[in-house]
Length: 279
Image (cartoon, rainbow, N blue to C red; front, side, top):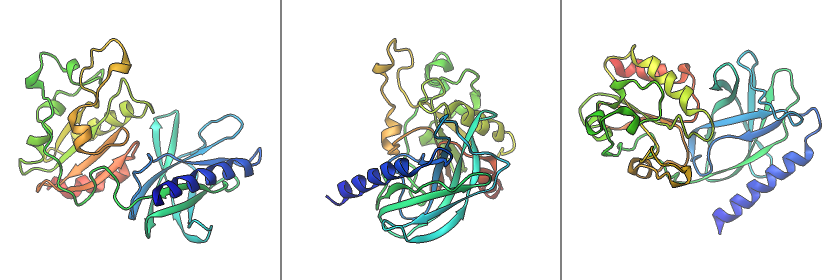
C-alpha cells in the first residue's frame, strides 16, 4: 500500500506540474526509469522540454541546477546539473547527483540558464532498486562471445561492432582479476535511441584503457526474429535486474560493482573512475 501511495502521489505531482506550466515555462521530466532511484547519493536523469514544440532544451553551453524538495514541497537542496548527450549533436538531457535521505515521494524543479524555472515534477525513491548497484558483487552471467557464433551479428546489433567487446563473457570478465566495463545496450532496438551513441562513446574510450576489459551485452537473445514482438531479453538482463536500457557498469578487479550509469553519460563521469582502475 505504501508503494502504491507513492506512485499515486508522484503521478499527481506530474499532473500538477503540467497544469501549472505556462506557455513559456519549460517542463521538467524525470528520465530515470521507474523504480531505479534508491536512497543515498543517486544519479538522476532529467529532461527539460519546450511545452509548445516538445523539443529538448538542455544545452551543453547553459548552466543548470535542480532543486530537490520533499513530498510537501520543502526544499532539501539545490544541485548542479551536467549535460549528457543522448543523440550527439541533436539533443541531450541533464544528469545530477542528489542526496536522497529516505524512500518516499520527492519533487524536482530545474532552472536552466535563459529559461524560467520549471514547475516541480515528482518521482519515487525506493529502499531497494531492482538492479545491481555499487557495492554489489557483479553477477557472473554466462553471456555469449564471438567463440559461440559464426558471426557477430548473431550476438550484437551494433552495425560496426568492435570484436574485442565480444571476446569474454561477463562471467569470465568479472572473475579474471581485471577491472571491467559492462555495457548493456541494443543499438537496433533501443527505445530511446541512446544505445548506439552510448556504445560508440564507450568503444572510443576503450583504446585509452588497456588495463580494463570491456564487454558489450546485447539486450535481446534471438536477433533474427521477423517480428520485434517476439524479442526475448537475455538471461543477463534479468540477473542484473535491469528496468531499462542502456546501462553501463564499472566493476573492479575483485568483481565488485563500483559505478552504474543508466542511459546517456558523458566522458567526465566515466573517465575519472577508469583512470583509477587502469593502473
